Amino acid sequence: MNAFLFKIDEQFEKDEAKLRKENAKLAHKLWTLVFDIAKHPFEGLGKPDPLKGDLAGCWSRRIDEKHRLIYSVEKDIIHLLSCYGHYV
Image (cartoon, rainbow, N blue to C red):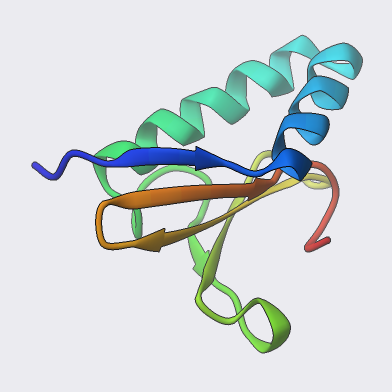
């Protein structure tokens, strides 16, 4: 099993705080997805989907109908980009 380091973007921090304030259950689901990404970044919970266009190279996982977790993976680093809304 690979060991990954996490790099957390400032936008992700803001989004996570907003999500946590609005809905603690969704914030918990977000962190469940993050832990799942650490195990297997390209499959698993939240319907992982490679993104295209400006976000090519990034992946999306569904938190709920409104919110997506956006992240990228480079070697042993998982970069958490955003988690509020769709593809910001």
